Amino acid sequence: MNSDTTQQQASTIDAITMTPTNRGSRVVILSASSGSGHTRAGEALEAAAADFPAIASVKHIDVLEYASSLFGVLYSDLYEQMVSKTPSLWGWWYEKSDTPWKGETFRVAMERLQMQPLMECLKAEAPDITICTHFLASDIVSYMLQKEQLSTRHGVVVTDIHIHALWLCHQFERYFLPADESAYYLRQIGIPDDRITVTGIPVHPVFSQSMDREALRRKFDVDPSMPVVLLSAGTFGMESSLEAVRALMLMEHAAQIVALCGRNEELLSEVAHLIEESPAHLKFRVLPYTPEMHEWMAIADLFIGKPGGLTISEAMASALPMILLNPIPGQEEINASSMLELGVAVSPTDVITLPYKVDELLGDPPRLAGMRERLKNLAQPRAAYTILETLLGAKPEIT
Image (cartoon, rainbow, N blue to C red; front, side, top):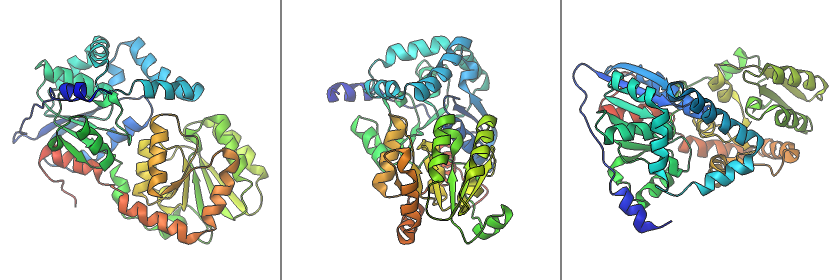
């Protein structure tokens, strides 16, 4: 990367600020249904906004619904196909495209041609505050600010540990970042320090509420004498999920294993059939999508899943040690490396060694307790509130 070029490009960055009026602020949250994390971060901000009297209205928009039909399908489906079918190709593209400001003029020009309905929507909404949890949305808002087609306080919420070049834009109020290292990176490429706030990735406000683990274990009929291992099976895909369940059936420690299958009914059926042959010392339970994920995380002793930005943030908010399996090359590998470095997660070299990792942690309670304590110190469950407070200059009703 040419540092002189980077500094020159970054020097054009500016923000258009506006003080909310007494009528209350209109807030528009922009996410994209390309992967679930961006949407969940938007939902977290939307839920937190309900606690701010200074907000007159809030609207959460999936920007791909306002794209041309072909672009919307390609944008979401191509990503899903690449990460599931050709993850190594995705990893190659992720690395090759990660040069700050390179190709952004052409990229933004192509995006705005495909996103005219979104631009018209934003003009009609005329938001006082715009919060983007996806880089496609932040590009469009930045362009509209630059062309004086919009006047809004533009917050960019980065939803992975590493800030890929796609997240960089010229017109913004503030970047909200997951970690201090992310802030250091932005400063090094020329982003002004007074436009950077480290908040963590926003998770739903329910993760900031205190929860009674024993009461929840009674609610879900969980044996208090046995550890609970939470498997996020629905995020792995059919075959990978079944491989993980088969591997866990080889565990030596007695445990309760809860396999969450999301909205995949076929996976739910296959896992339910598979666990019929589970050994007596393991109590398996298989569940479909649940809105009570925060409660299951609160009672679990160990989480097994993929290291998406929102997933690891929810686990951190729950002080739940992680086993990170099958990270996607690129952003998930970086997320996983960060969690390993912090000592709050482990990662098996292969699904075959998954039961070894689980047994190793369950057999070492002091290590597991140490991971929990580190997570408590690192967690930022009120990130959504901090982001809104910063942009509004006002506090929520709740404490």
